[in-house]
Length: 591
DNA sequence: GCCGTTTTCGGCCCGACTGTTTTCAGTCG
Image (tube, rainbow, N blue to C red; front, side, top):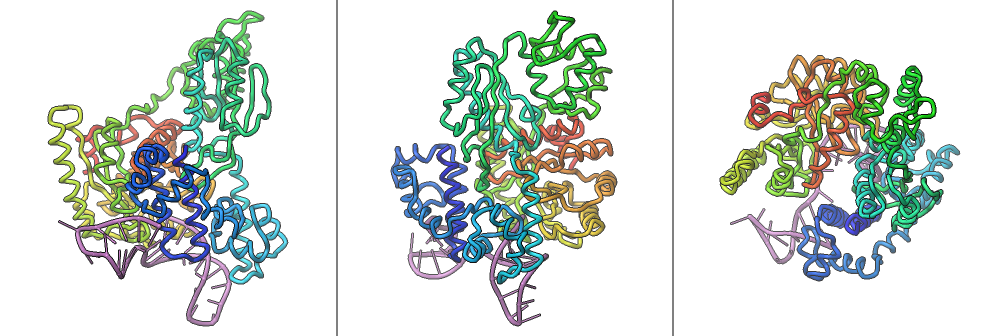
């Protein structure tokens, strides 16, 4: 908890420094923030063990930043941060989240119009006070309004990836209570939707009131909306669930306590979706039964309710995985007992989209590989950015060939250290790269260099606002390059921030099929791209997919879960996803 | 403000794009 808070402060300090046109320092603070966020140990612990000198061992942390960490630990505050904030007291996170608005514009908006937050900005834009400002204009004003509109549409929704880990942590704490017999997430969180409105927790307990007392007095709770004997609703603190430097308003959590004999029906009822439940209840009615959150009833007699499985069974259906419960045809298939066997969370054997510290990433190739081995992967693909992305320190042809040698060395080292352990001796690091698809569809690395890699990923990282026709052509041309095997984040959306770019997805699918190009299901929480609908389309078109994390630090390899969840929501089966294959088969496929 | 098998001082964080300029500033990846 500490680390994330602190990292967030450093990110914000960096932004304020950029606002003041300070050179280089912002970069130092960002880097320190990123490396603190990636730490496994709490900074406070590091400080207790080794003092300021211990803190200085953290990469990117020197004398000054170490002192600031010390200040934060001992006073809970950083004076420099307060000073920066005082100079421009605005909701920076909120304002820079609008596309096209950065720190410099925020500064002008505050100095000239005293705009502090989204509300002020919207008011000013609607009153046409923005366009006359120096450096702004008609178009900027329009873009700002559009950006606000887009933000509002996704307002109140949270990323699965930022909420789930915290809710799980809270569930762990609840589990430690003697009174808690069974516990689970419910609602959209259990269905693993890419964004969620609020979080639902379902508990079985003989002592509901003490569970309620414990829950409502959690330190993260900032507001109790309602507190009852079996149902409570609270607002969590703001920092609850932020990813990198993006902070959201606190999420609401609803908790319900139900009787043991109703747990299954309550879980079914509160997991939803609403549309799915409407149909299941209709099926019950047709069988002269009644289904509600307490159980399934024949007249007044309750005939089931303890588990979800028995509920579905009585309705004449197979149990449906929560990720599929969107009334998209899953009920019909479950009635015919013909549900597809969707990919399992344990099926992934490796991750081919990972960034190391050779480009903008945090960890060394070896460190990432160690995490991959901990996850029992058989392989790991390093795919650093290439030279077009200068700020990400993209690699050129020469650096790629240097990296190849490094990877060979590490592979040899891993093989030697694991001779005894047969399970790990199979592990292998592959070398790829994530090339940039330029405007004309060519990529920024020469074919001769691409040829030497184990595989090549290509993605769009610039000029997002092309026409549909041009963007489609651009990506198809990249797919036709025989070296390019994978298209990363194929639609380019950023959740709560940027729409997909315009593409003719059917044409992309046809070209992917024809060129045997793999489409990525990017597991990074703000991307989740392809989304569930496109995954289904790709599956239907017979296009192969791969679930990758796009991780920039080793801990982010765990994001794979969110990608698998999307694949499950898109009904993808094991055979549709190529990184469910063992190493040799994967290599053959890539070839 | 950090860092060092090019450097303990002098480099780092660049280039495309957009919209605002009339030669450039801000934003984004």
